[in-house]
Amino acid sequence: MNVPSRTALLLGGRREPRAIESLERRRALRHLAPPLIFGLVVIGAWQLYVVLSGDRESILPSPVDVARALVRDRSVLASSAGTTLGEILLGYGVAIVLGVSFAVAMSSSPLVKRAIYPWLVISQLIPIPAIAVIVVVWTGFDIVPKVIVVALVSFFPIAVNTVDGLRATDPELLDLLRTLGAGRWQRLRIAQAPSALPYLFSGLRVAAALAVIGVVFAEWVGSTSGLGNLILTYSNQTATPDVFATVAVLAVIGVALFSAVGLLERIALPWYRVAAEDDQRAR
Amino acid sequence: MSGAPPPRLEVCGLSATYAADSRHAEVAALRDVSFELRRGEFVSIVGPSGCGKTTLLKMLAGLLVPSAGQMLIDGVEPPELLGRLGYMPQNDHLMPWRTTLDNVTLGLELAGTGRPAAREIARRELELFGLAGFEDHWPRALSGGMRQRAALLRTFLAGRDVLLLDEPFGALDALTREAMREWLLGVWEADRKTILLVTHDVEEALFLSDRVLVMCGRPGHITTTLEVPLPRPRALALTGEPGFAALKEQLLAPLREEARLRLTVAAP
Image 1: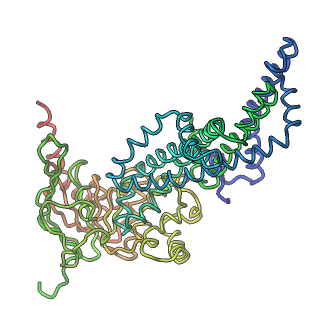
Image 2: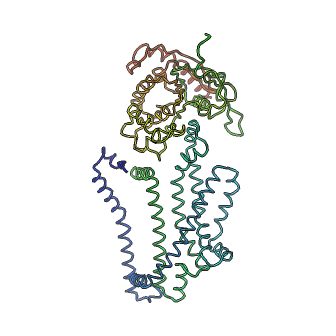
Image 3: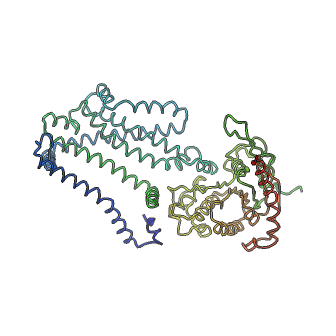
């Protein structure tokens, strides 16, 4: 990218690339350091509490116990994580395709929207565990019910955000495009899709968090593998440090998914990032 | 005068009504508006805000349908007006996700010109439009005047013969606006497109135009037409001359009358 950052422009003209780099590195440090230090303090306090209180490992394992469990269970954790991640990604992918398609259909036809939208909202009021039970009864214990549950919970934020984004397109821009001879699909491609993208990414972020919750529920209801299954197994054995270790791996998957969406957004919407940073600085 | 070509654009008896909301009766926005633009002419419509200027331009652009009247292009009523005339709305509407260059090539892109060719054509105009060096910037990084020039370049590059400009300098500060007027005249003198410009600024209308139409509101109608006898090319110094002031006074009289009328109507 040869676009000079706005910081550089604000500080007067084009700065040396190296100056911008060090500026950005310093800013990244400023953003990363506080949460990292806070996290370390909390973990340290936790360790200290466990050592001082002498609680049993099966009640509250210390961070060191959890770390040991992570190392001990690494092969089963890795294979379970692979299973669960596969279920999440498949379901998430299905949700993206369906969510965006529904959104485009709803935004191009008011009738379709009126027919579908209320049902979308109602479908979200049904608790996930209840859905998970029914889906497992229908489709069995393999990967299919997990994919369906993940897709169901991720679908809603994606579809609703995309509908909002498509609708938020500046109507005068659409008028301008019409005067330039743009048809409906050209208007969608040139104006509506790009203005909906930031909304879509917000939806994707929410969906990423929900997908991890959904997959655990689906695995609890009926499964023979995966991290959710592993949590049940370990907790039946009162292997509490191992339960913590499994939860930690789930958390890492959640954070990774969330960050991947963020990274993709930065790559796909360079203009949007610049705008957001400007707004932040203005405040 | 037989044998003379028909006017570029002819507007006859245009009227428009709209329903403000379902409970109120229809409101008349325009009443019996008629005028014509000759080939290569620069005409301005000046009037207070809310007098129906924008409605008129939107109709000419094909975005709104009049309740009565005709619009002829080169003497013929086109079956579809949309897409025939170049239209520049009040705000620049530059797309924040496209660089300046990709914004100004929009019309070419929609006309089917390939991207490399469109960019090449646009690059040639960057200098004239004061955008050289900024083609790869996001619109966000442009100043108000640059954004407006980018929007104008987008309108020019769309290649229509008649341009409808809706208060192109309305959002700019006074100094930038003045500079932009002079600049616009330079651009226009180069290829003499037919331009219809809408503004509430009498000085702007006089300085730019061959002819000024005064529009008064509720419903919008044309009260005065003034041929501007000032020689071209024109420079900013012209606005300080006594002849200019006299013309300005001629245009302001009906507008002041209208403003006074509105106040007295609103008072009780």
